[in-house]
Image (cartoon, rainbow, N blue to C red; front, side, top):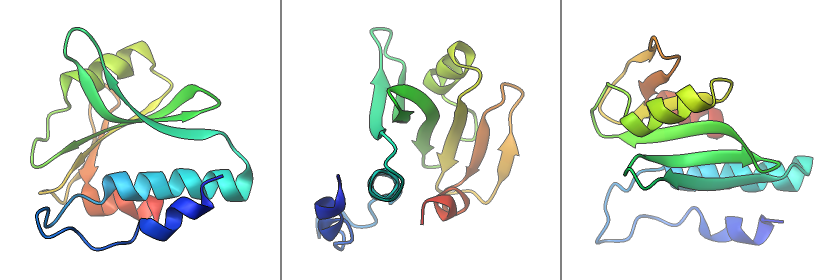
Length: 124
Protein backbone atom coordinates (compact mmCIF):
# COMPACT_ATOMS: atom_id res chain seq x y z
CA UNK A 1 0.00 0.00 0.00
CA UNK A 2 1.19 3.50 -0.80
CA UNK A 3 -0.94 5.74 1.41
CA UNK A 4 1.96 6.82 3.64
CA UNK A 5 3.95 7.88 0.59
CA UNK A 6 1.34 10.46 -0.44
CA UNK A 7 2.09 12.67 2.55
CA UNK A 8 5.43 13.72 1.01
CA UNK A 9 4.47 14.03 -2.64
CA UNK A 10 3.08 17.57 -2.71
CA UNK A 11 6.10 19.33 -1.23
CA UNK A 12 7.25 22.43 -3.13
CA UNK A 13 10.29 22.22 -5.38
CA UNK A 14 13.63 22.37 -3.57
CA UNK A 15 15.41 25.74 -4.06
CA UNK A 16 18.18 24.07 -6.10
CA UNK A 17 15.63 22.40 -8.45
CA UNK A 18 13.10 25.06 -9.47
CA UNK A 19 10.40 24.10 -11.96
CA UNK A 20 11.07 20.40 -11.56
CA UNK A 21 8.85 18.34 -13.90
CA UNK A 22 5.61 17.05 -12.37
CA UNK A 23 5.56 13.75 -14.27
CA UNK A 24 7.36 11.54 -11.72
CA UNK A 25 5.29 12.78 -8.79
CA UNK A 26 1.99 12.55 -10.62
CA UNK A 27 2.70 9.11 -12.05
CA UNK A 28 3.78 7.74 -8.66
CA UNK A 29 0.76 9.32 -7.01
CA UNK A 30 -1.49 7.71 -9.64
CA UNK A 31 0.13 4.29 -9.06
CA UNK A 32 -0.40 4.58 -5.31
CA UNK A 33 -4.00 5.74 -5.76
CA UNK A 34 -4.81 2.79 -8.05
CA UNK A 35 -3.16 0.35 -5.65
CA UNK A 36 -4.97 1.77 -2.62
CA UNK A 37 -8.44 2.24 -4.15
CA UNK A 38 -8.67 -0.57 -6.69
CA UNK A 39 -6.18 -3.12 -5.37
CA UNK A 40 -4.43 -3.33 -8.74
CA UNK A 41 -0.74 -4.28 -8.83
CA UNK A 42 0.68 -1.20 -10.57
CA UNK A 43 4.37 -0.25 -10.64
CA UNK A 44 6.40 2.63 -12.04
CA UNK A 45 9.76 1.77 -13.60
CA UNK A 46 12.11 2.92 -16.36
CA UNK A 47 13.72 1.17 -19.33
CA UNK A 48 17.34 1.19 -20.46
CA UNK A 49 19.18 -1.48 -22.46
CA UNK A 50 22.79 -2.18 -23.42
CA UNK A 51 22.28 -0.33 -26.71
CA UNK A 52 21.59 2.85 -24.69
CA UNK A 53 17.93 3.01 -25.65
CA UNK A 54 15.88 4.40 -22.79
CA UNK A 55 12.37 5.36 -21.83
CA UNK A 56 11.80 7.54 -18.77
CA UNK A 57 8.75 5.72 -17.37
CA UNK A 58 7.20 2.31 -17.84
CA UNK A 59 3.89 1.67 -16.10
CA UNK A 60 3.39 -2.01 -15.30
CA UNK A 61 0.26 -3.81 -14.21
CA UNK A 62 0.64 -7.36 -12.94
CA UNK A 63 4.29 -7.18 -14.10
CA UNK A 64 3.28 -6.41 -17.72
CA UNK A 65 3.82 -3.06 -19.46
CA UNK A 66 0.69 -0.95 -19.96
CA UNK A 67 2.18 2.46 -20.85
CA UNK A 68 5.58 3.77 -22.05
CA UNK A 69 6.24 7.45 -21.32
CA UNK A 70 9.17 9.56 -22.51
CA UNK A 71 9.54 13.20 -21.38
CA UNK A 72 11.19 15.87 -23.51
CA UNK A 73 11.61 19.61 -23.23
CA UNK A 74 10.75 20.43 -26.84
CA UNK A 75 11.54 17.42 -29.07
CA UNK A 76 8.48 16.42 -31.11
CA UNK A 77 10.08 13.39 -32.81
CA UNK A 78 9.58 10.24 -30.71
CA UNK A 79 12.76 8.97 -29.09
CA UNK A 80 14.50 5.85 -30.37
CA UNK A 81 13.79 4.06 -27.10
CA UNK A 82 10.08 4.78 -27.35
CA UNK A 83 9.95 3.64 -30.98
CA UNK A 84 11.86 0.47 -30.08
CA UNK A 85 9.49 -0.48 -27.25
CA UNK A 86 6.38 0.38 -29.28
CA UNK A 87 7.59 -1.91 -32.06
CA UNK A 88 8.26 -4.77 -29.61
CA UNK A 89 5.00 -4.23 -27.67
CA UNK A 90 2.52 -2.79 -30.21
CA UNK A 91 -0.47 -3.23 -27.87
CA UNK A 92 1.09 -0.99 -25.18
CA UNK A 93 0.24 2.72 -25.15
CA UNK A 94 3.30 4.90 -25.88
CA UNK A 95 3.43 8.64 -25.19
CA UNK A 96 6.09 11.29 -25.63
CA UNK A 97 5.31 14.19 -23.30
CA UNK A 98 6.66 17.56 -24.44
CA UNK A 99 6.90 20.48 -22.02
CA UNK A 100 7.27 23.32 -24.54
CA UNK A 101 4.38 22.38 -26.82
CA UNK A 102 0.63 22.63 -27.07
CA UNK A 103 0.28 19.84 -29.67
CA UNK A 104 -1.45 16.50 -29.35
CA UNK A 105 -0.88 14.09 -32.23
CA UNK A 106 -0.37 10.41 -33.07
CA UNK A 107 2.66 9.41 -35.16
CA UNK A 108 2.65 6.77 -37.90
CA UNK A 109 4.23 4.39 -35.35
CA UNK A 110 1.19 4.85 -33.11
CA UNK A 111 3.01 6.99 -30.53
CA UNK A 112 1.14 9.89 -28.99
CA UNK A 113 3.13 13.13 -28.80
CA UNK A 114 1.42 15.63 -26.54
CA UNK A 115 1.85 18.65 -24.34
CA UNK A 116 2.71 17.97 -20.71
CA UNK A 117 -0.38 19.80 -19.39
CA UNK A 118 -2.68 17.67 -21.56
CA UNK A 119 -0.98 14.44 -20.50
CA UNK A 120 -0.97 15.26 -16.81
CA UNK A 121 -4.70 16.00 -16.78
CA UNK A 122 -5.27 12.22 -16.84
CA UNK A 123 -3.19 11.75 -13.68
CA UNK A 124 -4.80 14.33 -11.39
